[in-house]
Image (tube, rainbow, N blue to C red; front, side):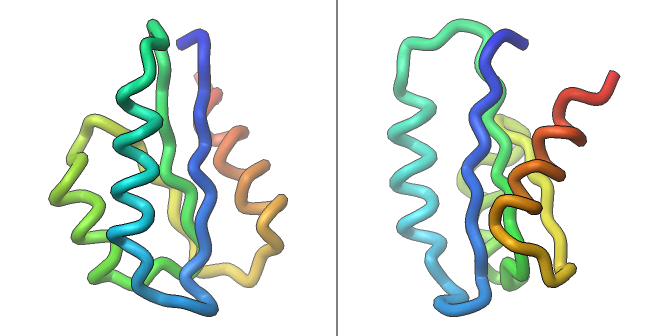
Amino acid sequence: MSILVVYNATGRKNPDNSNFYIKNIKTILEQDYVDMKLVFSGDHIPPNTFKKLYDEFGSDISYCLTNDKLAVNQTFNHTVLKSVEV
């Protein structure tokens, strides 16, 4: 993997942003990058939102979800660390 793209989201204030997430992730996936890995990083993402994302993208992207009370930068850092583990 040469490019890691982390789409970092939270479900705390507006729980169902699935259509917004899907639209933006599709835009990222349409880019001409070679050897790109996209990870959806989510904090308190409701199960119905995750289901919509997974139904749309399946294993084409990766997912790193947490229900811990973390700041947005902490969920991002956690996702990066998990995504580059060997």
